[in-house]
Image 1 (cartoon, rainbow, N blue to C red):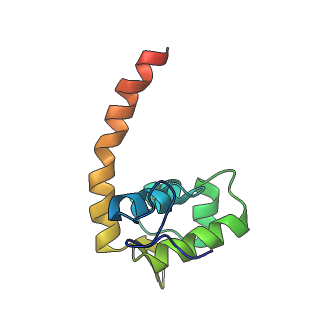
Image 2: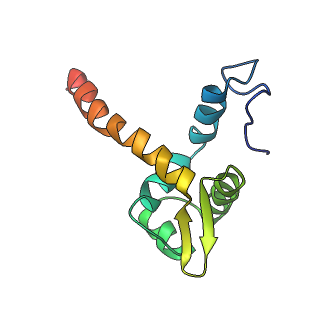
Length: 108
């Protein structure tokens, strides 16, 4: 399945608004988890699979392909790492962690 692209219909948007295309991509199983794990540094496939405890090798391979195609991660001699654009995305997403903890308290 191709990655969601701005300007083309995506989940939640017939027009393919860029933010909706990004949310569609990041909403795929394990996409956010992979970005989150790689925010700490470069990881080889097996290390990444270990960190994403319940991910299958097939799903990990697909998400790596998607995220590479989207320009968010890249493969190096030492494994996979966030690209500069991926690092920028993580910096934007990181505050969501604190916000989500605050939000989650409403349910406890």
